[in-house]
Amino acid sequence: MPDLSPSIVSPEPPYRPAPELLAPAGDWTCVTAAIENGADAVYFGLDSGFNARARAKNFSLDNLDDLVAMLHQRGVKGYVTLNTLVFHGELRRMAEAIERIATAGVDAILVQDIGVARLAKRICPDLDIHASTQMTMTCAETIHAASELGLARVVLARELSVREISQIAHHTDMPLETFIHGALCVAYSGQCLTSESLGGRSANRGQCAQACRLPYELIVDSEERPLGDVRYLLSPQDLAGHALIPDLIDAGVCSLKIEGRLKTPEYVANITSHYRRAIDNAVARQPLGISDDDVRDMEMSFSRGFTPGWLEGNDHKRLVPGTESAKRGVLVGEVVGAGGGRVIVELSGRIARGDGVAFDGDRAGGHQQGGRIYGIWVDGKSIDGDVQSGEVELEFGREAINTMKIAPGVREFGKVTIRR
Image (tube, rainbow, N blue to C red):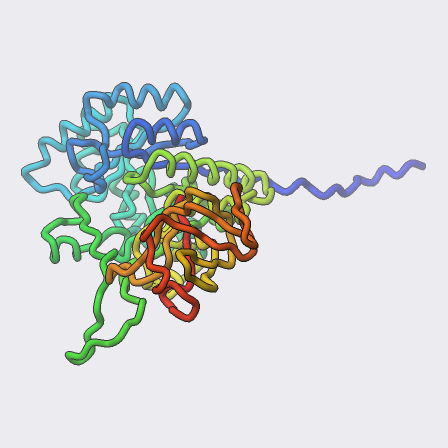
């Protein structure tokens, strides 16, 4: 008799729910870059105010119809940031902006001010409202309060780990969004008062003076404590959470957000395209497809050094090494000698003529050196193409650098980073 017992077949691994990829846009070109590189949604601010990136070019209410139409024609959603605190005398202007935003067909607004959330719900009840990360939603209890306000989504505080996000998701039905890439704030999710207290420019009004990016001195009992080259005590490195995309999807995150409304179109295109591929692969339970070269490519767009932020838990020294606060490029080698107008470098990354390089050093003291590579020499021969390994001699323009200060054993000038 034939075997009629049911066969046992291992099921295919389940597909993860695809999260939204949310890209930043500070101007029209950035919108195009986001669309063409696979963003599911774009967030942007208005030049009429009320957004936390006042220094971006932003968009006017007059061209909002065209912008929304452009996004929707490509199947991309558009979110407007109204994520600053609002004064009483500004409420009428805010109400007018909200009405205009709703009329244009914007998919959602992001707010920080609870009063703005209540106002928007009253005058445009069908307009979705997202809680900005600046609402500092760090637990299910705070999200319950947001739900009572009628909010449709919460952008979680950036100080949460994947484990904490997963726990929150198990205790709420609210759709959860989290940052996956970009600049981090030393204060709780942008709730910084330092800019206002030091410079009279409130970060919660879109005028952050970036006090966290300055070098500091440490005074202990009226005496200065030597810090060496660790002087940027409040400057976090940049978030790069690509490796944790599968974990975040499994944790229940519905949207992964790229920071960068002050960044260039090239940045938006580069970062969006890499995360598009990684998300698609994660959803299909395939390898993410982010190689070391891809990471270096993203670093070249903008990087203060990459970190998983708080997603893997607290590691303050990894988050804030304290040695840099500006874009620093990609590490490509270590100095092994200098003299005769050339610098000898043991390469660990690709360089070519025309590349700009900087030697690690005391940038705060004005002693960091760098310049454009005019010539590359290997074993006494001039090299025209790229070089990515071995010992090379780098030649710079006349008096571009002082090779007497760049030598092995000089700690602050021991390595070279490249900016293309």
